[in-house]
Image (cartoon, rainbow, N blue to C red; front, top):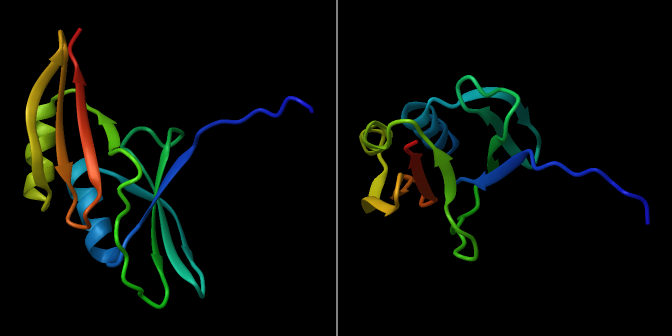
Length: 130
C-alpha cells in the first residue's frame, strides 16, 4: 500500500435546533461561520474558533426534515484549550451551558472543567498554566 497523508480537520455535531446551537457556539466560545451548506437533506455550518480559521473546524449539522436526535455516549467530550478557564466557563454558562464538573486541577499546571451544551453535547475546557 502507498503512504497516504492524513490530517485531522473537523468534528461534526448533529443538532436538532440549528439556530440555538449556532447561537451557543458563537456566544460561548466566539466561533464564526466559515461556510454554510443548505442541502435538501441537511443544513450544515462550518465554524472556526476566532483567530484560528485554518485550524480544526466544528461542523454543526441539522438533518432535514428535523428528526429527533439523541447525543451518543460512545465518545468523550469536545476539548477546548483556553487561556482563562474561569472566564471561558462563565461565558459558556451565560450562553446556556450546564456545568457538570467544576474547575479542577488534575495535574500541576493543568485545570479542567466539564460542561454540557444546551443541545446535550459534552465539552471539556482545559487551561495549561506554564
